[in-house]
Length: 249
Image (cartoon, rainbow, N blue to C red; front, side, top):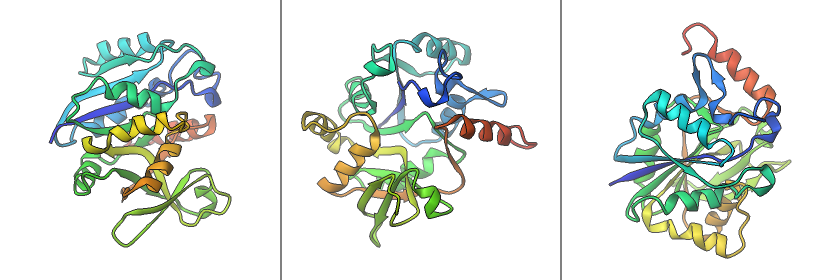
């Protein structure tokens, strides 16, 4: 089955100012590469990948085009037309914008470009395709409930189906954290527009996932190894230090 990857990179990363005042978060340096290079590396092994679309805002669109030319990568850049954080469309409207650019029969592999991980996305795709036509969400096991309070937390049944999603709860029921790494089979992609038409909050993907869990079957796929959410300057600096260690590319 054909898969189109959608990379969400239209945010303004205001929490990382001044680093991201004039530079997108996805192009921040990480050792000898940038964050987006690492994400593309994990994408290459995904089975059935037909194309890759990166959604950016107008403010940073040319920087992504320059990165594309320098790397010689086959990534389609979609400009959402916004130029300020106040005018942003939100992640779900950007996702719907990308969906209009792909074949209606394609499944969507959606990745937020502030996610950083070393496991190949082929592992996630293979498991997610077993749950078609239902959507799947990549999960990370947080080291403690205290850490889990910073993220969207899920509960699952014995078959891996998500039974609840709680966004940044002070008392999370589990330590299973939802990542911005999604597999949306083509048959369910119409729900994106239904969510928006119903007045759903388009700003953060977690609101859409919470809504999906209430609507029907959604599966969680636990992924191996570390995961990093580059949401603050401190988090970015910590990851840079790790990537500079011997043996880390």
